[in-house]
Length: 144
Image (cartoon, rainbow, N blue to C red; front, top):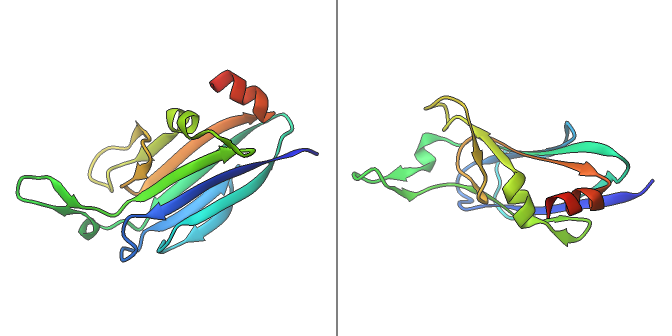
């Protein structure tokens, strides 16, 4: 069976804030850290046989005190998770991934659930979802 590698980095903007990170691929949790303090590089092999796949990156544990807002209502300091260097089978797909990722969150319970585009940073408790199919080279051709 042929395999492909899925790689990416997750980092935190503030190691002092206990931002939790959970990573699942096809419903199986492969990483769970209740307090990200440094950049973590992921590399996980996936079968390249015909199939549908979903990467889910979850931010949990974000608290209201992790975001500082001034009197004008502007955010002056925040705790974020950043996802970058996304590769499939050693091919940089960051642009394709950012176009196709969905960020599911509810503004930390202050608004109704929503689905947003993802621009590289997660600032609310929620899930980042990325769906793709294999064989990967067919998916890449369809999405480039």
